[in-house]
Length: 359
Image (cartoon, rainbow, N blue to C red; front, top):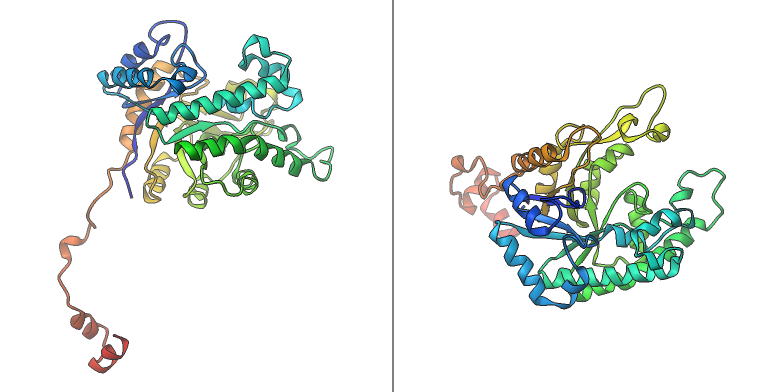
């Protein structure tokens, strides 16, 4: 067992065009004042980080590391969710996903995917230069529009989608192997990898690639009513990242998990600021600690009610309070007494002849 590291802060929901959220140094000072020890940096946000420069320039990476150290911070991981989403876009989402790519790629799905692949490869190299071992991402969505089987899915549709998904990702996973970086797919509704079974389908098609890992975020399990504690045990060897994000699910006689097309505030399942929802974080931190998770606990703040400043401040304290410093002793060691093998034999009623036979 190892003590979980934290708290880290995922910056995707905090970066903005206004101070102190408009530059990495300014947001670092703000995060340190709010009790964070690390930052999880979205590799797509050029206000904070130039992923292409970081992939090629060690001096740039060292300058970032040194600057953060002045605030008592480190980088916990890079995230590449926007790039990952563009690796596999179903045509029905083309117009919506165009905004994730540069304007000259709008309306050009194949060129957009090629660009996303190069950005991911740059992020892998940048992670390596920064001394990071985990990187978060989304899988993208080829089969998601067909998640509910009506009209019934044609035979082979899901299998073909996952074959293609693995084909697109294998070069990235191979680059991760070369650079010593684990690629952690966030298990997330809207993505083809949205639960344990879909992750297994993908993992099998990658040949059980050693760099194919999981970013665990329990909020998405609450919204789809999946047992997140069982998940932690089943996939204990694959969990490389952890988002601390809360949620609640309050079904009524009028709506359930699909939400009736309502806004976040009016859905039965909705994200809440950490500690305000239904996620059993004490059980999660206990299970992760027991299972030997050695990574960071990173706050991902999303809430339909509370403001982000209070959410961040409270979230940092929440994570600190839930981290379990691992013991180096057994609690009943005080009553232990030295016992020889011969005494053990006598306690069990084993005779000298039997002990010699078994020895």
